[in-house]
Length: 207
Image (cartoon, rainbow, N blue to C red; front, side):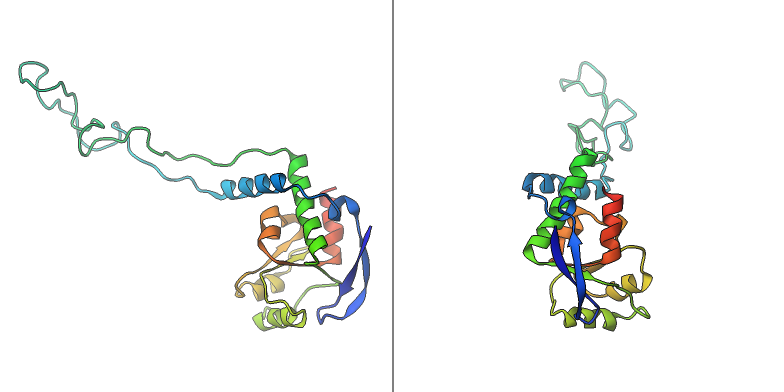
């Protein structure tokens, strides 16, 4: 087990915490992380793009000319894909882009992402994280006390409304709960602020 310093919100060390090797000391698997990120981004795609086939475009009910005797090619509708204003062949239609990934692989990818933050020293543990009121200035002060000016992710054990509202106006800063952690957010942010209770919650939920 690795021991990590625990700080208060003013960057004063108040103790240490032992991190489980099962969650925070997992060997890196770049391929698995890539698959987990692609899964998350693909699942967010709306897939609402659409084109009209010859059966959906307006018009084309009357046969343009008789079948024989005109010297022209046979035509049954002015909305054939061969005509201007006709339907589209093999065009995009509403669909879902998401795919499935085994639960064990999803959880292993999450552990790989957390372990990487611990190894690079971008894993900051707080004894508690909350603000008296939703003020952006309070969140900016916390980041300043830790000397952080990079994209940061705040993770709390339970929903903290004041933390979410205080960080919502800061570009590159996001607050989520332990149940909502995901590979993309962990990798997308450079620094990870997490409370002791959130670590316990993660170990309970994703064990």
